[in-house]
Image 1: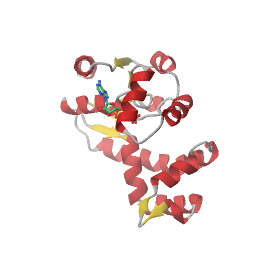
Image 2: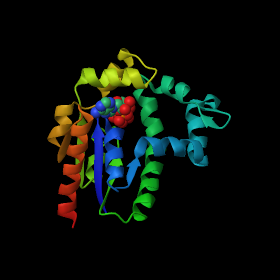
Image 3: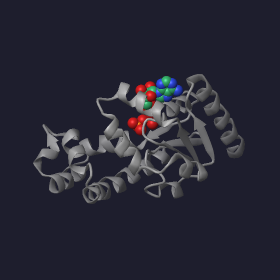
Length: 195
Ligand code: ATP
């Protein structure tokens, strides 16, 4: 199975682009969404996260996201320990999911693909970019967050330039119709090489 990694900085429009590929009939795996589902479902992940963060990690058996976010914010060591618990299980879940797909290729959306060396497991990589001010504006509309928090996340991610250098395709996500055209164009190019 051809695996196409879809990445981009926070608020660049990864999920918006992923939806376009879904509309084109391509199965999409959104790593962050699946990780959160597993953090709520998997007994072993739950047990290990409670060991790491304490009982407050879950409220009524549901992941206490604000508590975890506050713990890992500015604590790289804890974040790494959490990733060491969650990432291998998400990888296993993804591998099982991939085996069930029958399409010419699949899209795997991963926010921090290069940062975690996930690019080595992809056949092609699409990076979504958008001007920083536009990303901040969209995120402030979408989420209860602040410019400071967004800036702190952006600082921890690779720059667009670094990602673009190592990508096969780049989508400049400003105007939505134009983004849809770019996604269709890439879809056709990938189909050409896979068929
Ligand atoms: P995150 O990094 O948080 O996972 P993301 O990169 O997946 O975000 P999206 O959730 O797709 O980004 O987009 C962020 C916000 O911007 C959403 O509210 C989305 O609807 C909006 N948005 C994305 N692309 C466009 C566009 N081309 N025109 C207008 N709004 C857009």
